Image (cartoon, rainbow, N blue to C red; front, side):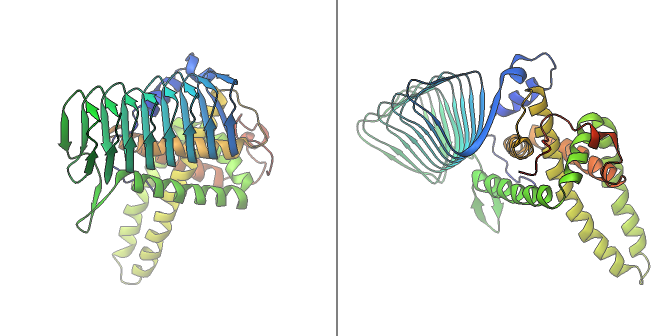
Length: 363
């Protein structure tokens, strides 16, 4: 399932992906991915360099000296916690009670900038946003409800959806303009579907399929990652041929009355293959990114899946860029999947020489 979102809520990861594509990029070498049930940056602790975290709960009480990118159930920068760069989060809830020196971008169920908290500009697609602290730049928030509490300060413009309910306390300050605009949501039978909800649903569905694929066919997953990372151009070409050629062949089969049932079954299998190819493409992307970061871990294949899907999901929120990124991921993933199916376990060089980031463990 592809991301169907239209809203551009996180430009940061698009930049991250472009920079990571450059072999000599410092960011690609220094970003540190990590995953777990609960990840805590304790008070007095400092993580140096950009961090990519995936966990049920992420709590920052200390300092992240760099950008922080998070996929989690809840993300909290506690009072006294500091992120010196940008914070990008896809989560159920995002709470900032400390300091985010850079920009805050979020796709979440709820967003809170607490009293005494300071963040840069805000770009968010959330169910509800509550601001009681200081936003040093502009705030663009797509939400059902925005609450500006006493003591809240927005030093730039506040832009929100036309349908958003804005509750502004008498002591809340907005130094720029307040603008109602059409920020997001895909129409579905006349009802507005928030961009963050569509993106989150797609992410979870893709993650479930990816986990199932890697559990049921781990050897195939390793071959796909190997083919996709080492022969990306060839994989993309094969994927393009399959994407265009299969529907044409099925349409020709459907010309005959006898062939109609086979054609219908073929189109269903084709749709499933596209979904599998897309998820494998994200897995290949995550494997490649972790390889650039030189990450070695028994959990690398799961990290590759999470990082790849997170990057593709966020890129999918960007107009045009998102479509192109998803299309390329689909082509490479579909082609690598088809090429990997040609060989038996251990018959291709990629199986013997597993790429960094796929992990050989069945963990």
